[in-house]
Image (tube, rainbow, N blue to C red; front, side, top):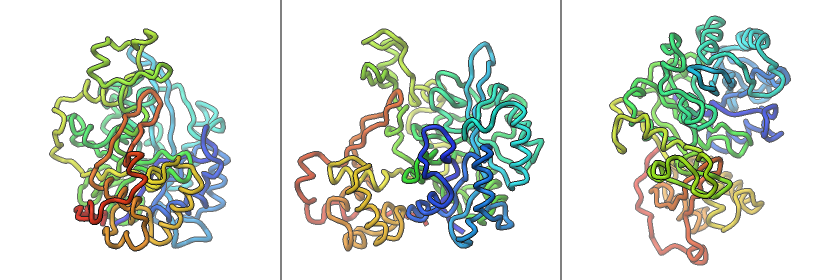
Length: 423
């Protein structure tokens, strides 16, 4: 069975997260996107866990669904944990995803973690012990759990981050490294960047949205071709089986807010070579620049740019539909006009992913305004202008120039693009 899964998001109990991040609302948005399986996120938070237990029913396969929608969106119990500790004389901050097979296992995990910190303080709790101890602790509770370093390259809170991370999985997890079979690439990195490290050839690269609001679900995701069950999904990830994980869906990594180096306060944006030229310092204020993901990848890479891992799982890059609509209309993505048009298109086109990847130009033209259609086709072809993100500032994707918004695309322009099908 082929299906799309987004396995990392947050509930309304996490900081800086929409109050709409609860099971019914994210299930609704999953249907709009074309996503069959969602991570619950935040199962360590006591109030959210109570909410999940009151609304979800187990399906007998390690997954769950809403009680009033037994054939609807399915859920996997997931959480993210932050470990802040000192190792090798350096402060470390590593975020890790935990997948769990049942409420019973989650209860045991929460009971254990509750002895080391206040799990009710935030949907993503913080602990002071090393990340490798987290792995041992969770797997001692259940060997069926899976732990995955989250957004592996972001500067501040990740396994490879420039400011608080490590140079290898083994350095971070020590004797527990054998249990780390996957990493999450994060919004500012994509599989192509990770293919440059031979050390990651046997590691599965997964992609998830890390959504803090419902509309952001699916901005990155995974396409599986396996039984829709907890065991089958976890085994596919552990074994890096290209027959069962067939694509990841990716942001253009330049859009991520830590892709390049820079200093937000001084509006300084540098490519890695510029950072090296300036010895890592901001030319405006003289303070240390925030070193982004591309720089860090180049530091650890042992293959040239453009190299392909011999065990690579292919990636599809996309721009979310609401951003395409916003660019065509010349307004912000949160504008009411964008939401109205988004909902109309999804109602006519099936799902967002159908519109972005599946429907032919001729099919799209029957219900899609010409400029939005042109935007979808340009994204499929990668014909974009991108200003990379840096130091917490999201990158900016430009599909159209201001002049182009005032005219329709030329007749037949870009209508013969090759289709890369999700399914």
